[in-house]
Length: 98
Image (tube, rainbow, N blue to C red; front, side):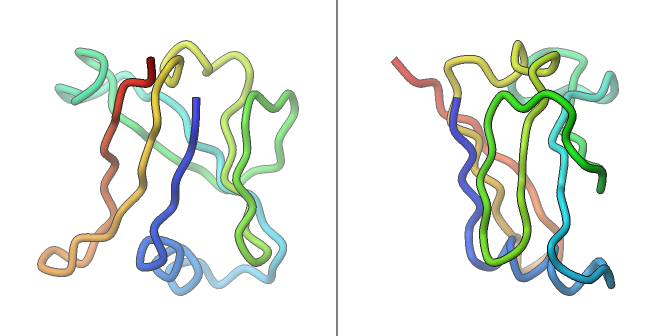
């Protein structure tokens, strides 16, 4: 499991939340929608401190992480958080790791 945050997505998080650094962004599966990776689940996020980390990616004071109990959703996957210029919003892509 890997988390990749593109620069434009990082900038979105930095400008969207008026929270002083350092802060934490939890990535987790949410039962909703059609989901690209797992049917019925989509990627969600919240600002909260970690309890039991499975993986993390720290960039200039913002730590993006997955909790151990959510690792099933991200297992053997590279999750890339990107920014769509046209829609002005973030989105995730998933690449299976071998």
